[in-house]
Length: 87
Image (tube, rainbow, N blue to C red; front, side):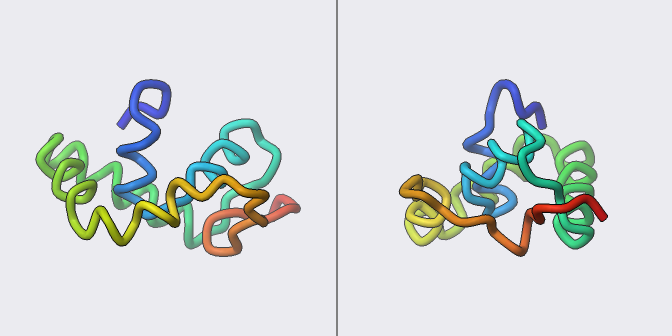
């Protein structure tokens, strides 16, 4: 999964708000250990099953995920995915 070419699919696969991903990429926040584990699992599944895995994650309950992933109104730090200080 390449963050530079499909951040939306990555966010839907992980069920991660785009704002959280953007802060992590810019190193404004740091990933939680649980978040890192979920990212690693998703990357392994992506390489084992290919884009079929990503597509199924994106399409699974997509309407339910839309608000969480696309909410961009001053979203606070998401404690599932990110933390202010580095562990």
